[in-house]
Image 1 (spheres, rainbow, N blue to C red):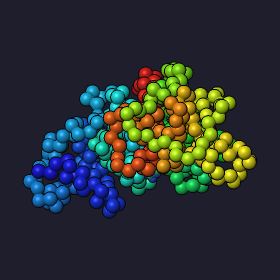
Image 2 (cartoon, helix red, strand yellow; image 1 turned 90 degrees about the horizontal axis):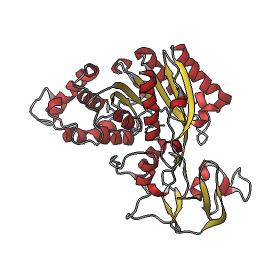
Image 3 (cartoon, helix red, strand yellow; image 1 turned 90 degrees about the vertical axis):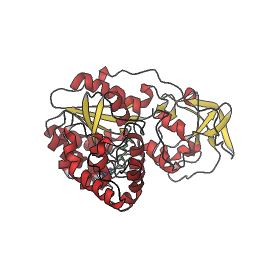
Length: 402
Ligand SMILES: C[S@@+](CC[C@H](N)C(=O)[O-])C[C@H]1O[C@@H](n2cnc3c(N)ncnc32)[C@H](O)[C@@H]1O
């Protein structure tokens, strides 16, 4: 009999062959064997399973789903009782899936092409995402209530190259639109960096909205800040919501007072302290956003385009030089900072945030399983979405639109 760990061992091999959709079919089939959605995945799943049986010289077991303990070896199994279905596009590590499952949402399809993100997703949800969305056979995507897509932000990001639709990644929204056109979900939920609002003088956002309206959706959007949802991170993201019957009302979303970093910090673990000269400012600044910029490393930093003496005040790419107080918020964790140089001043010392603290700053529960590759972990969390923010948004979607 083939068991799940045998299948898992094959995973890396499959990915290296660039053919991981076999495992995507199999795991999607297993996760959906109790509902009609399984039809979309059944044939390739059984074919692959049969091949596995032959390869490993195992006893043939046609009803594979009955022998695999899916609910036992993953921290985030699907909900027992289901209120709605959704698909998770550009799924990353599942920042949408955790809160949506908590709200009794059943994920019926996932796509994500990065190997490490797929691995993380599989470890936590027991499902391997389908790969490149541009290569997807749309028939594989089942009907669903909510389409979720935190589409790649590089073309729109202030820390990216600002190429917009000329950048091929910018066109991924068109793949999303194709799925919307074919499956007509009740609700479309898109997420991106705040800068999308201003990109190309607002034309990029206008174009996306127009395409959605052409497909019959009534659109509303708002920039939300993670710090209003109980996590100490100043992370602003645009949320775009479409529905065919009703306009989503963002004013009903419940916000909380902004927290500070300190209660989210770990204790009793080894910290990486800053072991080079730095300056703690006596006259430090509390910014309107709630950040407390309290000091900076003394290291000479890349100065191109920055006025002399103001290097430590420049934006995003200068963040590794700045030190923030644990009595305030932390700035947005960017995906580009793969060595995790997020310096904080806490109890009179300067140290890096730990990986676990970074995941807490995004609202991930501590039982989220983290893969064994530190720079990928930093990249993944910087790419992800604030879990409690999604939860509040989806609570309102359920209330207003489902
Ligand atoms: C901004 S991140 C979204 C992260 C996600 N919301 C989360 O909670 O982790 C965008 C993701 O899209 C993935 N991606 C980019 N191009 C893709 C493609 N052509 N097909 C599938 N996934 C893609 C990237 O690997 C990245 O993980």
